[in-house]
Length: 188
Image 1 (cartoon, helix red, strand yellow):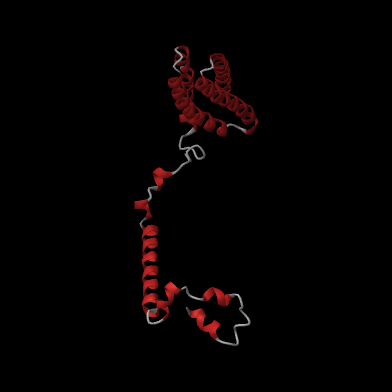
Image 2: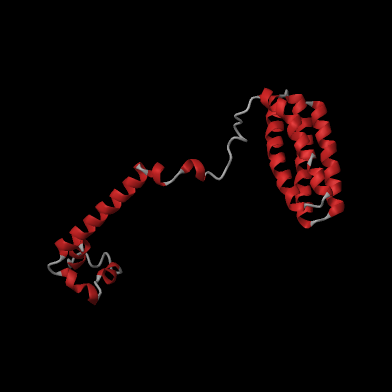
């Protein structure tokens, strides 16, 4: 609306030739051109105030609306562990045994239960071993990281093999897990 006064002046029309065709109001909006300019500006202002109020309330009161502590997709405890090295060392053997107890479920060919147990026990063991590896001197870390990688790659392969109900692959991965766990526990 404010641009209309610029465009209707005869000396400026040659500067903005394409702009004049875009400013014309459609016939359905011709009634806004007359007396309703003040009313229209009040409606726009009140909408702006309403939108700003809504956005401000979301920003200031967002903690109550968006529960960010439960909506996080990542578990940052793995990156910044809340467990000490002593706690990890005391629990690593028990968690390793929990991982190896999946054998009973594999013998029964209870694939879903084996997958569930495997995932739970490997997640805890992974955290423990990671903390222990980070506390070791740099010379020992390379060997431990390689064993760590071998162990959890075989855990993943076992999980997939159990999903596919591939018995021979399950047992091959389980044997590799046993060897990797024993190697890691002997070096820790």
